[in-house]
Length: 143
Image 1: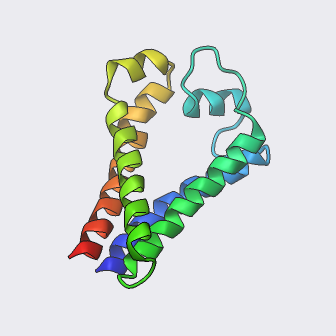
Image 2 (image 1 turned 180 degrees about the vertical axis):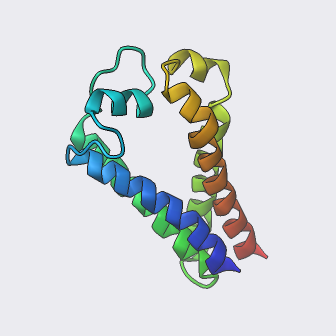
């Protein structure tokens, strides 16, 4: 059961990391041009370009590292207490990001469409999914 939850947490993170990696190399997949892609993933009014490529590359590595932590958490005997704490921190970060989507401060900071709609319908549920996966893995380690 642990490996299933670990895999169901890892795969979405791997897909996000791959998209970030592609964007860091200047690709605009899955949208036809950079301005439209930036509007879909950044959310600030008037944005016309993607963020710094180095930052996107670093973010891709962080997301991939979070996925690897999910797989490591699935092994009950590995890592010790620090891995459990790291998994709990990941759960808090992803769940907090999901909750933030529905706050008025977040809506005021990132009001641009199509990001606002994608955030409510796709990004927030994905964050809740991943956060719940981390939380389940942490709980299963403690049982």
